[in-house]
Amino acid sequence: MVSARNFLTDEEKDLLVQTIRKVEAHTSSEIRIHFDDHCEQDVMDRAISVFYQLNMEKTIFRNGVLIYFAIKDKQFAVIGDEAIHQKVDADYWKTISNELHQNLRDGSPFQAIVKAVQHIGQTLAIYFPDIDKLNKNELSDEISF
Image (cartoon, rainbow, N blue to C red):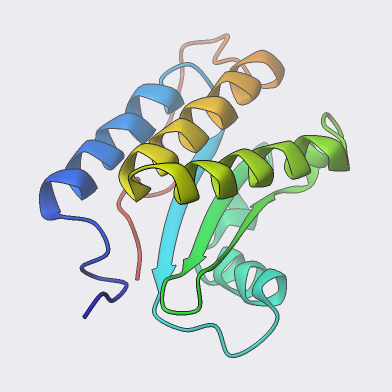
């Protein structure tokens, strides 16, 4: 039975972490991915709770993004910290969510998540480039559960 921990293969998890690292090499932002089995509350409320549990609000520039999944409930949410909201509007997040939703329906979950990370990374590199090349990795790139 599919669960949060086995939704992706170990190889896919490793490749996803590598994708996050490649994306973060071009931005001062941080991207995290979290998988739960179930979401016992509104998916956005749970994503916000996880965002704080992962200390994502403690980044220097307040420019972290969380992609949250509740696997068995087939729900997800994508949220960004306050500095990102000053740069992009609600339509941006709707576009990301719609693309992720469509890609999850049409193909492999792994590829859908990779595309989402890459799309978000392109935007973060525009608004939050690693100008000083001091790209200090403030948060773990590992997938959390």
